[in-house]
Image (cartoon, rainbow, N blue to C red; front, side, top):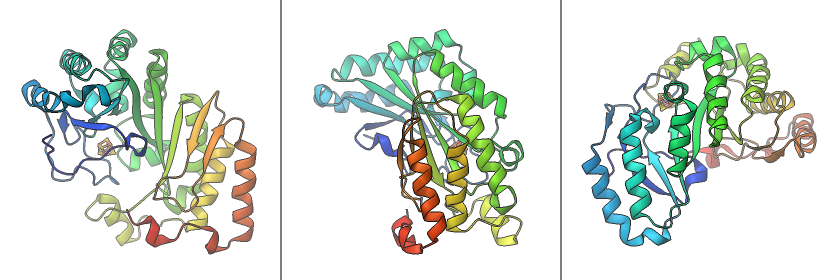
Length: 291
Ligand code: SF4
């Protein structure tokens, strides 16, 4: 397999074969994101991708999950993506599910029928970064999508029968918007009603615009217990049909795995207990958070 640069994938794709079909992110301007710094976006040619698929095809029956990297591979034009998925399905005979990162605009460029076609070609899960449900925060971090677009994109994915996993970022609103960010994010997540939510804590990547805001004092980050208070408020405002909500990412101080709505109250009870005791020993230590 020929990978260009660092490869990122969602934690839940740890067992998947990573097939790099694009390089970098077509947008690449979110202020907190350093994942694809220095990578110019390009869609790999079909011949390049085919070569990688051919290389693994001898293990075809043993590969059940594939993740298409990089940052927003759903930006690939529909016909080209269909061609890749068709070929992958033919060569990887054990294939059950393909996952992909997407931003809201990539999704909205496709109608439900097009997404259904991709689903029939094994596209089983889309990972979408909401980061914040607060309008001002979303604008400040230059997320390149409005709340309305995020919600419409989420509904379109679900209407096509594809699983939706949404990522949000604790701390991204700074102290100024801390509580409002948490509450609004919980409400917007409820409107999106995804199958999975991953709550991560903001990790400041050197060289990113958000690092400059922090160094200049423009953005002040909440304390670890401030982040846990955000988690509490967010969960409190979430109303899901059926969702697995996880804060067990390595960036978080309090790892939780919650089946919503059933385990919501128990999770809130646990979070409030931690907030009441304010004992740092109850938190994941910083050296274990180093990613
Ligand atoms: S869209 Fe995603 S990958 Fe691209 S810059 Fe923003 S957070 Fe990073």
